[in-house]
Amino acid sequence: MKRHHWLPAKLAFALAALPLLTVAASAQIAVSANDNKAVLVNGVSTIVDNPASDTVTIIDLSAKPPKVIAELKAPASVVGPPQSVAVSRDESIALVTGAVKIDPANPKKTTANNQISVIDLKAKPPAVIATVEAGAAPSGLSINPAGTLALVANRNDGTVSIFTIANKTLTAAGKIDFGNPKSGPSHVAFTHDGKMALVTRDGDHRISVLSVDGNKVEDTKKYMVAGFRPYSIAISAKGVAVLTNQGGGQGDTDMISVIDLKRNPPRIVDTIAVEQIPEGASMSPDGNYVAVTMQNGSNKPSSHPNYHKGSVLSIFRINGTKLTLAAKGEFGAWGQGVVWSKDGKTLLAQSMADKSIDVFSFTGKALKKTGSIKVNGGAAGIRTALD
Image 1 (cartoon, rainbow, N blue to C red):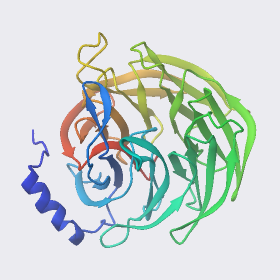
Image 2: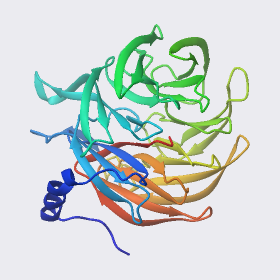
Image 3: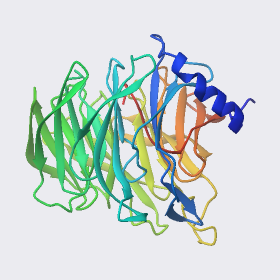
Image 4: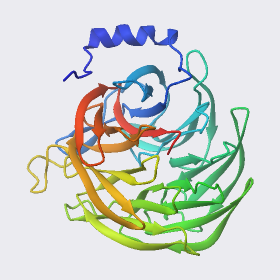
């Protein structure tokens, strides 16, 4: 079994060659945002002295095995859900949020950032072509199916920023204000018809429903309550959404919840227990499965009674609005995001602590780790155009 762990010298050589590479037209692109500011020191997230720049890694997920095709510098952050990346359906642009930055007044701390990097995936090589400002600590974000609108959850000021998109250019078009700066909007996701968006709010434990009509986005004032600290959310074309609830971080059983989007208004219809701190969620392209990453105590001190060496990746089969466990596997520590290949047979799961992305094969019944891709920074956020 061949693993893709590059030695530093090989890595330097490969990165030097990256400007010569282009994003192949036949590739399925996965974009990973990598945070170089934070590391785990015996279970404590610690700011690095004089950290290197954060990076973005572009991966060809259609390759066998998946391979890195480009890397560039852009602000990223492990703070917030791992949907801190959005990729347009035509794979022409990617957006990456940088929720926090090193505090200029105290290099041992971070402070809220407000930046979103716009990356041209068709450029040769891919490059950051613009930086736009959102609210405080922009975190999860999504691009609508038409590629004309982006919504950004601003975790530190209780708002969602609205941007129109034309010719790879983002233009600010207003904000949704929930009236509570501590509501903690974490992630926002569009339904597949582009007419509605759901916003998880880990500060007041709500999931808000937004209406979308062209470029007009409004808060319907309708909301749901699932578990404690709703965080990541994934939506299928079959009228089902699955969200993670972060829980209290104490080692208790945490939960994921199912939303029936066919109801008006949408409602939470099921909640099931999972391992500690469910982090990322991603729907399979056919909508038959949802993948969920759980940190599983891998982010705790080794002396903690609920410590485990690795994170957990679980695949749940979706039958209507019911979830049943189809397969489970373990991967690196401090797990973050997960994405699927177009054929539903390959998954990438991020390990922030290991600075790697583990590769899994999935047969519908079994999940097997087949390799690992090293990235330049802690793997903190990941998306494809399918998410």
